[in-house]
Image 1 (cartoon, one colour):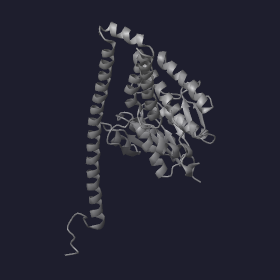
Image 2 (cartoon, chains in turn green, brown):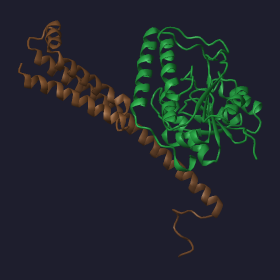
Image 3 (cartoon, chains in turn green, yellow):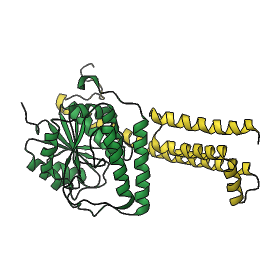
Image 4 (cartoon, helix red, strand yellow):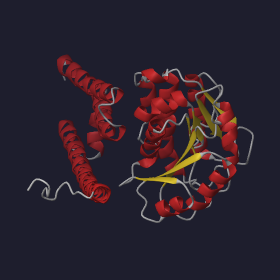
Length: 243
Length: 130
């Protein structure tokens, strides 16, 4: 029986990350023995694909930018076709700590999706103003939809088990914010179990997220729209062989 | 304004909203394309239920006849949607071209691999048959 790590595919969507992607891939492969790693180059104009390849990752290059949702769907399809059980999404900018992947994978023993949450009492990740309200609103509504307490629904650090991989390989939303919010709604409506574990975010190599109030208000509106659309849509059934 | 025309206005705008939301629900329409139609439907519904808001808005921008403001806003929204579609079509065409080029390049690489493996080129005239 192969270990959990050997049955796991790390999917890393990357857009113009030539400075970080190599180091992140090396760290992932170094800290997680037996794991496979694919970098989805989402239409980068720099050396991202070459750097990822040099570091030892499998690389899939998209001919143009599809966004995180489109890149992740390719990752799920690759995992399904190559018989990986689990997919873990890790950012290519190094803000996620690869050693915490094992914590996420342990969570998969009791759940279909495990979110690495940034506000669950570990680390010092803070946001203010409308962006904060958007995240609180999302966590309140999503906790009800998923029937479990979720504090960070827009985290890009997630582990998906076999049922979630099969569902997402054909139904992963490509819309902005759809890859986090709507994807969780789709999963909850399909009857998958979602849970979260506290994780620590590292300092991003490329500065902090913007705190511009207008941008944050637009973010709030788009998040609300993504949530609303996800909620009114009819449930997607699980693919038969996965359930 | 007669009751009939009041009802017509409200029903028409409600119909627009219902159709757009139902299409959004069934994934027949992406969020970014639905936005303009939603805005138009909501504006029409407000003006339909409270005709006073239309008169107030017409006065505010100095339009003599409130109906003319409806036509103006209607045409403006249609114009913007058309423009958005033209822009999206341009992007889609560019992406299709990129895909076609990439598919041709891959075909080339596959043929080269096949030639190296089998010593035959599918496109070259068949040397055995002649």
